[in-house]
Image (cartoon, rainbow, N blue to C red; front, top):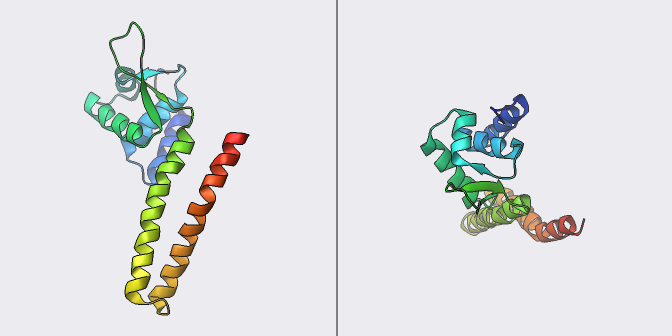
Length: 147
């Protein structure tokens, strides 16, 4: 990939508009659209025309989220990165922790405001929705893996 394609840039814009940091979104899109299995940080710098520090920060965020992983590359002294085979499952599993945090915050809010208050009714709806999503997620992931 000599540079970001229009489709890759469009994907990065979508990711950014949904809350991802701009450069992390561009690095993620570049990794998704790469023609090879693994990519080095240097290649990403070159393709995206961004600094090594910016690439390093983005790679750390993507690694911590479970989307990408460092992989050995025999004969190379550089670190290579690739999308994990189970990247999307990992992402949804990690998001379950976020969902649980929102669920617990709503539950605490209900206890503080009272279930029958206006705020309490809103918070009950929020807590119940997040509880439902968390309860369904393992089955969704299992059905995905079974495909």
